[in-house]
Image (cartoon, rainbow, N blue to C red; front, side, top):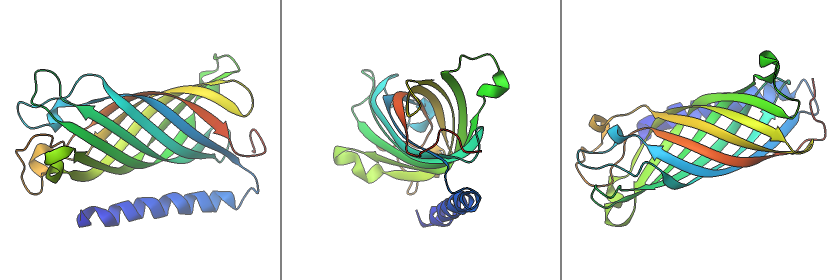
Length: 212
């Protein structure tokens, strides 16, 4: 765990320094709060032999805050929680998977040039940290590791303040079964990647729609 604290601290410092530097140029900027619910699929290579999760697992919860420096680009910091459980043909287990990511955001809508005015297409990606904790008697098999998240959001504006959106994201874990510390062969141990699909709300927290 300690070997990841310095990289995670560095990620957080860079994120907030970037936010602060850009914030000095404008007194007002576009802020959004994001909340989404959905389902997840953890990759099979993250489990020990003979163990695998259901192809569709609930819930997935994502909560974040986003700041746009310009109309096309910005940053966001978000937290995600997933729970997945064994498939019917696997031994029984349940795992809580949490993550936190600092991401860069790119609004590709104008680059595409053909979408209706109320639709926006947003790409997001950035590094973060993952925590996995099996439930019950398996809790000693918890793990933590660095990740990289990449995703695509499609927003539909209800009005200037609120939009609904869907997000398809993949969280790649910089880890493998051989990275267990200590080496684990137990049930519910997960060192891997997760695929998420969510539906949510984005709510503007700033006084202007776009501040260029």
